[in-house]
Image 1: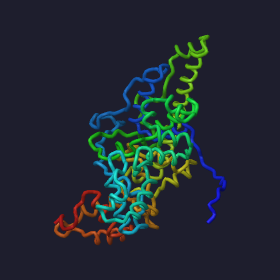
Image 2: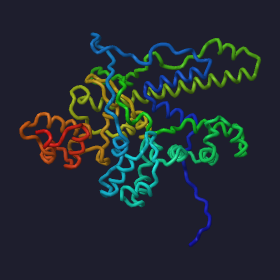
Image 3: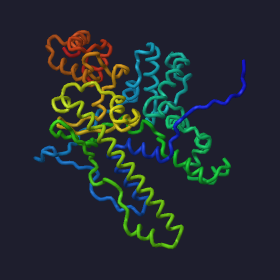
Image 4: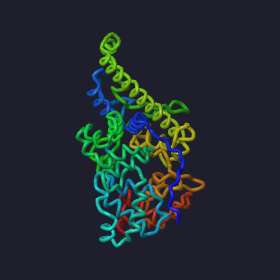
Length: 431
């Protein structure tokens, strides 16, 4: 066996700290963006204080035609609800599917896996090798960083997804996270032999990562949701407006701009120059977020007009298709859509509900003729059960047969799963 060394060339996209921050801003919902703006205002003295409310909201019974709804959040999600729909379980054995469920149920609230594969195997009987394979699969799911065994691994997974493999970054994450938390730049400089400038840049990147990938994504349900985007129909087209309330962009105080221009102190001038550059960058990122979200929402609304105006099932529309039509990367569409809500003439829904993920995912259903999404199929099941003979409730097999008559081909197992997700009891419990 030849164990010699060899040089291999490969191309990898490496994102700068500003690109990473711009991506994070795109992924923020309206509430996150407002809180981010308030924090930035505290740290940058040249920013004019933000005035107004974070959202425009008017009561539903106010008599206004143009009101903004606020709706209860969905029922509490579990890690299983969030992660398993991203896996095509049809590609795996029953034992591997059981392993996926066990792993998801074993995650703590932050998204980390406290038990080792050996420990999980000990009380489940699932072979260690199967668990290791399934854990590796789940580490590639969104949000990136789930299923890590430690904080350091969680951050490394996110760096890898961003195309960052800088040795200094990895060394700081693996050996100096406590120093990062303490702000002990000099200790890291001494230990690594790198310049303070490089260390500070690495710390900035590390602090932009999410140490708690599942935090806020599971176990919620008590808060209200205010839509991020307002969709209105204009003839045969749709318009989309962000619900940003009193915050649109950062404004710079004229006094400091004048001081930066007139001062003879080079250090002070450089300080103001950096702060002004920071404001300009953030405003560009916020404007890019606005443009990306409104373009995606308008395109999706145009394709889903019937669904938004009359209900029923949305037509097939994948994020890859949307990305191709808009000239965006699919990951950009995914980040923009995630966690956002839209208000439309029929009410409020998740933006991602306008996208059917296609037959490649076990979490969605699509036939050659109908192209019905997962949510569309669930809605059809709910309607069938609502109209059934209460003396002779429909079995899952009967539901599958009736769906097939409508051009939707799903398995009995999938029908039972969707029924359970909607809180609908089995046939015998509905008698």
